[in-house]
Structure formats: C-alpha cells, structure tokens
Length: 242
Ligand SMILES: Cc1cc2nc3c(=O)[nH]c(=O)nc-3n(C[C@H](O)[C@H](O)[C@H](O)COP(=O)(O)OP(=O)(O)OC[C@H]3O[C@@H](n4cnc5c(N)ncnc54)[C@H](O)[C@@H]3O)c2cc1C
Ligand code: FES
Image 1 (cartoon, rainbow, N blue to C red):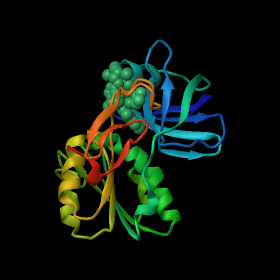
Image 2 (tube, rainbow, N blue to C red):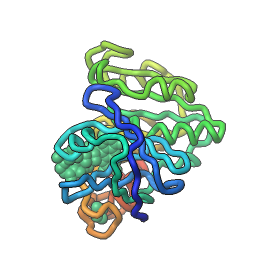
Image 3 (cartoon, rainbow, N blue to C red):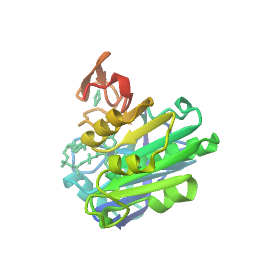
C-alpha cells in the first residue's frame, strides 16, 4: 500500500450520474482499486482502476451518496490523497484462449483494464454489459475498440437485448474457457450459476481501512472468512457462498 497525491486532470459527466475521473501523479499504480480521501468525509471511498498508464489513472464512478457527490463537484487541478496498491485483481492468466467478461452498470469499469490485458496476451474477448436504461450506458465504445465481440442488454430494451445480461449471454450461444464478472451481487450470482466454465467475480463491501487491518470488510467463503479489500475484491467462483 502506498499513499500518494494525485491531481484531477478531468472529472466529467459521461452518463446519468456517472463521471469519468482522470488523475495524474505518482508512478505506475498497482492493485485493483484505489481508496480516495474525500475532504470532509471520515472514511475513504474505494473505486476501481478502470485504466492506467505511468503517472495517470482513470476511474469511472457513479454518484450514489454524499461522498461521490462531493467528488463529482471537484474541479480540475484539485489535489486528492489516494491510497494505491490495494486489492487482488482479476487474473488474466486464468483464461487459456477465450474469455467472457460480464459487467453490470459500473461493474464495467474494472473489466476494461482486464480486457486490455487479455487482448495484449492474444486472447479472444467477448464482453456483455448490462444497464437499466440507455442513459446509463457507459464504455461500450471503448470496449468495442479493443474486444472481439461486445453485446449490450438493457432492462427496458432501449438498447441491445431487452432484459438481463444472462439473456444476452444465452442469445449468443458461444462457449468460453473462463469468465470474469463485476456488478450487482444478484447479477454475478446468476452469471456464476449459468456458466459452466470456471471464473471469478469482483465483490463490493463497505470498507474501513481498505488495506487488510480492520477486518471490517470480512465475508464468509467456502475457505473461511476473507477480507474483500486484501484477499479480494476478486474471488474465484468456487470460493463464493452467495
Ligand atoms: C473494491 C470496490 C471497488 C469499487 N469500484 C467502484 C467503481 O469503479 N465505480 C463506482 O461507481 N463505484 C465503485 N465502488 C462503489 C463505491 O465505493 C461506492 O459507490 C462509494 O463508496 C459510495 O460512496 P458515497 O459516499 O457516495 O455513498 P454513501 O452511501 O454516502 O457512503 C456511505 C459509506 O458507505 C460506503 N459505501 C456505500 N456504497 C458502497 C458500495 N457499493 N461499496 C463499498 N462501499 C460503499 C462508502 O464508501 C461510505 O463509507 C466500489 C466499491 C468497492 C468496494
Ligand atoms: S476494510 Fe479494513 S480489512 Fe478490509
């Protein structure tokens, strides 16, 4: 874990209540998520790394409460204190040749960096992204630029397949040797139940320290209690007790 200072290069609205935050500072950042101190709030806010290059981080976040609302009002040039090097992320090496990535809402964010890593390894990548409505859709064009196949589902049918990501997956009738998923628990549970191949899911829990010390994010797994911030947030399908 490392404490660093990053300045906001961009913080722009990209969909309903959804912002793309680009931060600059430090060197190459490790880990799956960052823990951002929002001035005026006691606890840091955990947000996934969507993309990164040396000295630059991209995050995509939704305004859900007061902390993310305050973040969304921050201007370019504002300096933020950020903990980096946190979390055990997706394992691109677990896929042999054909991966399915399934994201629900902002669950698309950490899958983007994974998609880039899988493509860099020469693997075939299919992405299915689910949203409630068209105005919530994010990152589809970015995934289309790098992945082999991208499908979208919306609950209201305004874009893509009408229904859930599981409807879109069923309609594609393809086989994969590994899957990765991030999004609402109910969606990830359905995806894990539907797919026969092995895979992994990225969980969200409320966090105190974000670095493995306070045990505030502990969950029960088939292998005993695990800390989402340190042992996860990504867990293998077979470890999870839904
Ligand atoms: C590992 C990880 C990665 C995440 N990545 C993203 C991302 O890339 N984009 C995104 O939009 N959101 C992401 N989230 C969810 C994000 O952390 C919450 O939406 C955010 O903390 C809400 O803060 P708030 O002050 O606006 O909401 P409030 O409801 O006011 O927050 C109150 C407290 O609850 C915590 N909290 C509320 N909702 C969540 C939640 N879903 N998960 C964890 N803590 C929560 C807050 O951090 C805060 O401590 C991630 C969560 C985790 C655990
Ligand atoms: S948040 Fe403190 S151990 Fe996970």
